[in-house]
Length: 72
Image 1 (cartoon, rainbow, N blue to C red):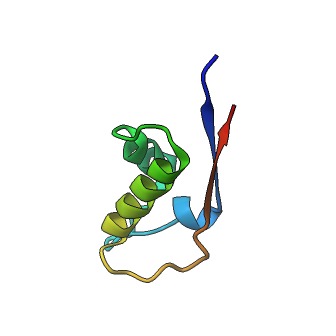
Image 2: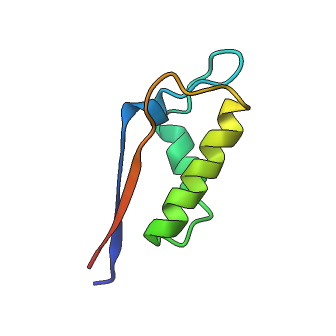
C-alpha cells in the first residue's frame, strides 16, 4: 500500500467568499487537488492558489488554516 495524504482545514477555507457571495466549499478543495501529485506541499500549494484566485482580492472573514500530512 502506498502513502496517502491527510488534509485538515478550518471552516474559513470552505466558507471563503468571492465577489458575488459564492463560497469556496469542499468542491473548491477537491477541484484544486485534481492536478496535484498528492504530496503535502503540493496539496497546500494548490489549495492556497485556488483559494486566492477564488477570493479575487477579498480579505478572508475567518482564519484560513490548512494542514497536510503524509500517512505512510
